[in-house]
Amino acid sequence: MDRKTIFLVDDDLTNLTIGKNALAESYNVFTLNSGARLLKMLEKHIPDLILLDVAMPEMSGYETIKAIKRNKTTARIPVIFLTAKSDASSELEGLSLGAIDYIIKPFSPPLLRKRLEVHLLVETQKQELRHYNDNLLDMVAAKTKTVVELQNAVLKTIAELVEFRDDTTGGHIERTQGYLGILLNALLKKGLYPEEVSGWDIELVLQSAQLHDVGKIAIADSILLKPGKLNEEEFAKVKEHTTFGEKIIEKIKKTTTEQAFLEYAGILVAAHHERWDGNGYPRGLKGEEIPLLGRIMAIADVYDALVSNRPYKKALSHQEARRIMLEGRGRHFDPVLVDVFEQVAEQFALSANNPDI
Image 1 (cartoon, rainbow, N blue to C red):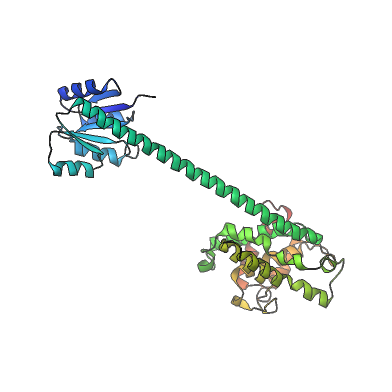
Image 2 (image 1 turned 90 degrees about the vertical axis):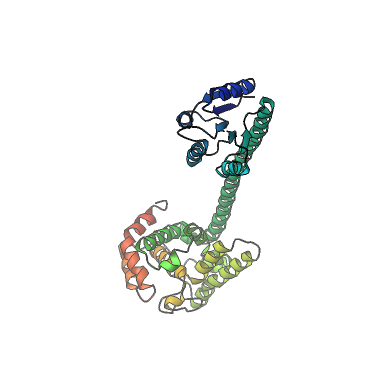
């Protein structure tokens, strides 16, 4: 076991000699004759414990310990006061300044050794406990990271399962996530809708966006994979994916305590096909009746539909899609959000071609 290092500080040479002789067999002992020299020594070396005389000229032990405790580097060093004073008020003052013990001079060498042995053992245990707590926090953080990564992997798999059933929209989920992130960042920078946006966990919002079309899992393949334009009855069935999605999210809510993520997902699922003019579905909400998350997702969703191939149409260019989006201002989309889209439209174009941007 490594020998512990003790700094013994006293202006009296006799006390320094007696103290060093009493401890040298078991510890590395360094003697210093003033508080100022102790502080200078602490700039280069950190001991395991300090024995500090109270009554010293120029800088008292009380002044010295205050300086030690103010410095983050030395604040945790245990300090034991050595003093000829035996009154309770002096002892209380020393302890209140951060000392761990108070030894009366002249001290008994065996008693001094025993007191140090006990305090050093306690300090070792405290350090081990701090080390354990630090490691425990690291372990919890690592475990949490693993759980989050697993959650994201499960979500991505579910989302891709839905997307693979609808092979005409490959990459739609990943692209809409990218568009959503662009819009949310722009809203934050511009300070728009601050009361709502500032309270969101953006990372959770983006994760939950993967589930916005989860209700399509309940749509029949004959409709979802139809190589042509849907008739009125078939389109009515497709529109039900929003309410199916809501039911799926509500069912998951009953089996988990992770409500924030599911709250975001539920809003995105239910509201991304509502229109500003009230002609959307499933509820025909109008204007600000539509949750803000749904209004934002509508822009990401429609833009991606415009620039993607479908059985009934070819993909439009970015400029054509941009024109249609701007024409939807105040009809399909929230006017404020369309203005934001116009300012970040080129980022959409880059994201459409490079989903990882």
